[in-house]
Image (cartoon, rainbow, N blue to C red; front, side, top):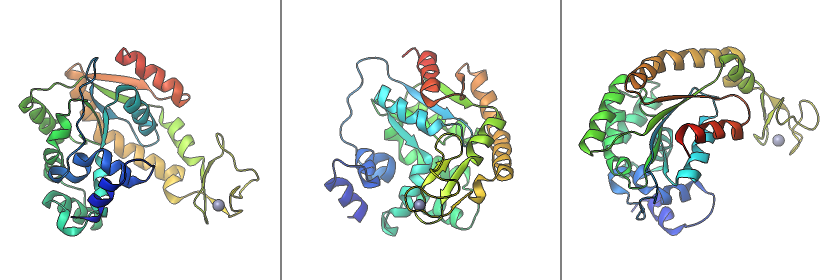
Length: 263
Ligand SMILES: [Zn+2]
């Protein structure tokens, strides 16, 4: 048995990442993981896709939604991170292929990402519903998801697209400052350091990470838009797309989300 599974099973409460594995074993371990039994919610079951560029606050909304709907937040990014922590022999062939692509700086192929989702078909069919995040990224992945849902006789409730003006996102991300020593994160507007350029925790020097430079953020946003535009059109055609303006405070964005879903 792998370390990760032992730890997942021995830890029940806490804030470590291992605990997350315990709660959503099937998502993190694929075919090898079994989640504790989930009861179907008394009300409506939500099966949602989340779309939104980096910096749109989609992750925060996912956390709020998870609480409100009691549904699992199924993040494709989490699978990649979890696969890295697994022992080699516990990785499925799709996990191994995804990790080797990433370590070589290649894009993870559609077939591989689709295989990762197929291993987790139990999560898609979870009686508690789901919030799928980071999948699909391409039309091929969207078609595959449609096929999986059809096999499971399930429908998507909606596709939530968190959209914000790119200028806002660039300002949001490029306002971040990180401590060189303790890695604490500040924000020029929302969480300024007590004295300029200096960490309030350890006194270390604050800097803007290369990824957070405005030019780098613009490049990421343009790439995201290019890859997402076909998905947005695809779900709009199917009448599933709900565009939510991701401007203002996270609480305000969540109020819009609630309204949009009739919560
Ligand atoms: Zn510091």
